[in-house]
Amino acid sequence: MNTTPPPTSTPSRPRARTTRALAAAAKRWPTVLGVAAGADTLLAEVTDDATHRLAEALLILPMLYVIVAALHFRRATWPVFFVCIALFIALRLQDWLAPSVVLLAIALAAAIWGTSHGHHRERDFRLQLVGMAGFGALAVAGLVVDPDLGRYLVAAGWLGHAVWDWVHLAKDRVVSRSYAEWCGTVDVMIAVGPAPLTAGPARSSSYTRPTVIPLVRSNSAPPEPVQSGASSTGSALEAPRWNCTVRPHSSPAAPPESVSNPPGYSPGKAPTSLSPGATWNAARKRSRRSTRQAR
Image (cartoon, rainbow, N blue to C red):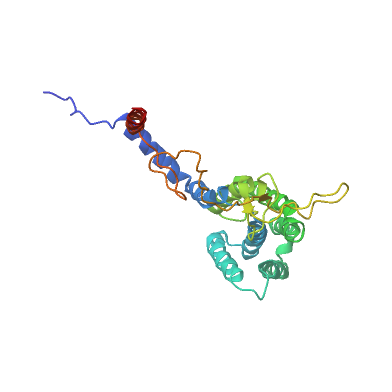
């Protein structure tokens, strides 16, 4: 009696590698989503508005930690995050209140509410208040100082909060693990991206490239030479002018009568160019005419 089991089909190596890669990506889905969410920041242009927007968004991160720590409910992390994002978008669409003022007021209200409920005795809640004070100070400094300095302060705040997220992920405290992993990845993408850290000064959103003035021909008189010691900064952007004198075209004058005109010539008209054969025939005719007259 044959007891050999039937052969089973084994997946190919490329398919097995793809399966393992998909399984690893599904396991680290917060990191994948964080990279996707911060990818546009890597291609963002360095502007004053981008620095201002990132400074205001930085206030959301410690504020969420304070709210979740005051609620003592880690499962509320993602719902609170979506509410904060919707509120931030709504605040950016209006001009009556600065988003930073509203976010700081909400963080202060959450701190007062948690303290009134006795959470100030807890170490995690006190630590979140310290984090709110530190990251809030960096965000406010990035809003009020010069943009060239503010973008470095904002970048330091985002990078510092990435460390904050990974520490809470390792200790599994305060917020959910998936949010801590996702937020830490996004923070790193924004901190090391070109928006805050690109070399060179930040540009305003209304920045326009200088207009290049082309050379223009002009029939006017050339500009007067600059005297020694005079400043020429006022005319640094003026286009140089070319002094071109246009001479009127005149018809050719009739040649003197003593000069024999070539065949086909008429006064006031340009002479007609003759081919070599026509020139030879005209010379033969003149030679025959002069021979007859000599006879």
